[in-house]
Image (tube, rainbow, N blue to C red):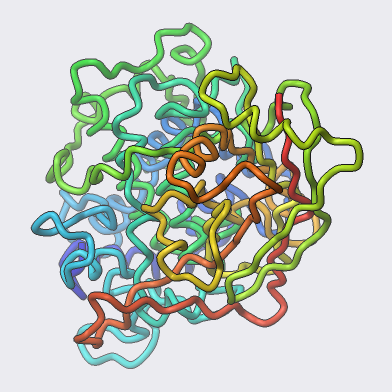
Amino acid sequence: MTDVWDDRLLWYARAVRAMRSKPETDPGSWLFQANIHGTRDGRQHPEWNNCPHGGWFFLPWHRAYLLCFEAIVRRVVRDELNGPDDWSLPYWNYTRVTNGDPDSPESRACRRLPGAFLTPDWPDDETGGNPLFLAAGPEGRDRDAAGGMSIGWPEVNPHRAMQAPHFTGVTQFGSADTGDRLIHLNGGGSGLLEMQPHNLLHGFVGGVMSQFFSPQDPVFWLHHANIDRLWAAWLTHPGHHNPTDAAWLGATHSFRNAQGERVGLRTQDLLSEQQLGYSYESLTEGVGLKPPERLVALLAAGVDPPAGELVATTGPTDLGPETLTVPLTPEPGARASALPEAASPQSPSRAVLTVAGVHADTPPGTNYRVFVGARPDHAEDLDPEGPYFIGHLHFFGAVGGRAHHGHGGAELTFRFDITDHLTELRRLGRWDGEGIPPVVVTPAPLGPPPDAEEAALRTVMPTLPPGSRPRIGSVSLITT
């Protein structure tokens, strides 16, 4: 959705304004609904701070959340505002590509915040007061996103997730098996869809959206509607199936309905959007484009890698708005042959890069791309479709001074199996097996401003808010 004031968005804005006027204790209020996901201060309440991330309940829980929220907004639109009785929640299709070109002006426009979220004014010339608008800042949105910049295509392309053959698993579509536990901390068990585009989009919008009280930003609901749509689209593939485990199917997710009554929705009742009474305009548009063949496996951050030999490490490193090289120091006593052995196709050994202690004091408004072996002063080496790219770092759930019930303030860990990556670099003659290839970290470039005409080939680096201080605690390389 890119229309500045689509009719559904106008009614949505009116409903948001009405819900914000209600006390936080009212289940139909804006804050009560947002607090179900997470609060700013971690206050105790049995119905708040309940969002699951990093596990296989991520998708069904958020589908139930959207379903109940949509019903509440529809009741407000119909009964309190005398609006249409068939109002439905729109989705923000930031994964849409026009004419097969993710760099076309139309494609880039889809990756900007929808127009109604970028203006403080109403369409009837009323100045100010638009509840869909949040100003730039930690309590609003990142200034680049708020200024109409676009998130990069490599950060939202969902192809890897959409082609994953299985639902369950960190390297699969729908996140790790967490039994009957709802894991609240984003990180270790996140599957491919949750990592990208979900987490990276949260980080791009920044501000409120990069923290666990993100539903206070009205664009949260349109973002998650698109994530829900991608789940529905993934299931259209004949080989893709939801889990059949009793622990997953039988889990009950508790919310409030349009009348304010407590309701429990089981996962097994949430498997089909059509059975729930809604459908999406398209399940084929915006489902990703095939990335390069060479892919680096993201390992479960919450699981220790197999015991191995520590090859190289580095200590704390502050990140910023520029490309940064993180040279790894060889571990004393480490075998010089350990890394080239792992990069040999005939060897069963693996090379694992761990980036730990990822954290920021306030939302940095950007994600970071990680490269191994790249030359930081060569732009072609920093191409996310090139041989040096290994993955992303994000800060969703890793902002602030302390964690609240597992929400926010935590440090995230990212682990990458770079074995095949190193093998490919040797094959291409870009690493001779000597020494430790440098780790290069760069902010994810943004798209051009909305009024730029020449911007097809131009990228803009994000501006980091003062005091955000994004950083990593350590980087280590082991061979197993």
